[in-house]
Length: 135
Ligand SMILES: [Fe+2]
Image 1 (cartoon, protein in one colour):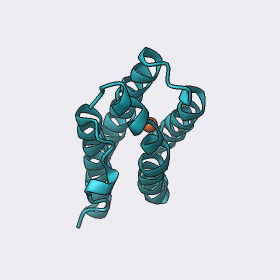
Image 2 (image 1 turned 60 degrees about the vertical axis):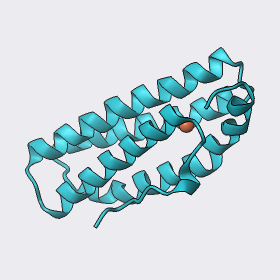
Image 3 (image 1 turned 45 degrees about the vertical axis):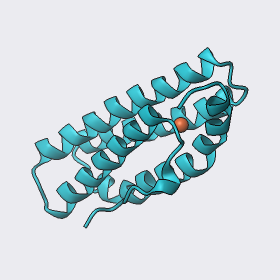
Image 4 (image 1 turned 30 degrees about the vertical axis):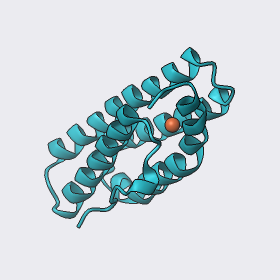
């Protein structure tokens, strides 16, 4: 069973961003499945790299929108992204150093962070960007 399920409440009403969020939900679910099915170290390490790379790419997309439209909440929002990036980067280095349990410990963090971040912090920019014509 998937750890996270996408639903309309998570939508920020901007197509490209919703697609990226769905992709991140997908990577977190794959990581969860890989962990439960005790798949190999290489699979897990690959998924962690994918999570680091794709979330970085996604945060850049949001932050580019913020700069382009002079979103006043940029700094606070970016600080949440930066915290997540450092947590995931730390998780990846711990895993690569042999601590496989770090992924088990971090699963709740990943799920909770992503849904809280989308539902609270991301939802603050959607009316602002929608008002600038971004959908
Ligand atoms: Fe965000």
